[in-house]
Picture 1: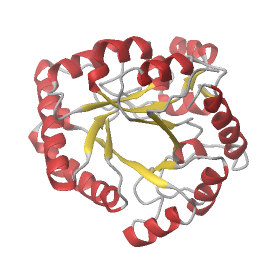
Picture 2 (picture 1 turned 180 degrees about the horizontal axis):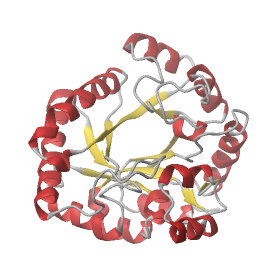
Picture 3 (picture 1 turned 90 degrees about the horizontal axis):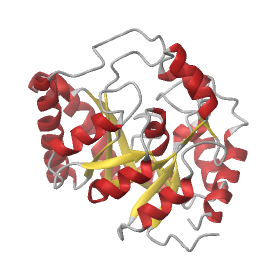
Picture 4 (picture 1 turned 90 degrees about the vertical axis):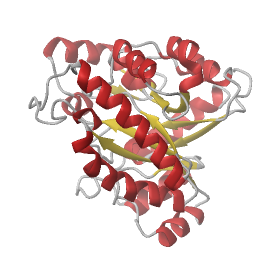
Length: 300
């Protein structure tokens, strides 16, 4: 048992209930997600894909509040490495999500770079490496996004390194952080995605702690990951194989990650995300209960 991690606010997300899309018959209904995430003992949630939870702010606020829940963030994907021409499409999505997040008192917008290969079919959509010009577009675009989201909605943009995107490995993550203004762009460190791509979360927190604005707690099964790497399997099928596993059975060890984050001396959300799309609708709640119990044993 570690000492209390009193700067860490733990939550969960629709992702941990197998939700990847606004509407999909294989996903649990949103009412069930809200009921079960509260039953599992979490106080904070993310919005998940826009349109999964109610998008009417008053209804969403009521549904969340009557279950004793609060919203920490919304999430968007965008391809700002494509340059100014990509801005309008990105902003249209950002505007909807940020407005809803702000309306329910969230403080963060998690921004995930677009995929370079299709996460289900493995179709190559773009080269996996950006050109120098594209890196510049990505950095300047994210800074613009951070500024405009803050000014218009009062939210902090935190960029989420993600498998099969251009911000994934340690090399790419540190290049992105070094190229962007800390006052405009924070880091959402997803421990599972970073391990999936070969990174060390504790080392990243110790090196770039001033950039950390948000955490996603996730673990990877190293044996399944080894097979996926050997076969070049894209992220979607990898998840279907169970590459993201229930804590504490995978890597990284979340105790040291939480301790390193606590050591920064700032308030942080730590949102559990165990990718499980698609999954048996009976599976998420027992896993969520066990995961919450495990995190309490870590002091969170």
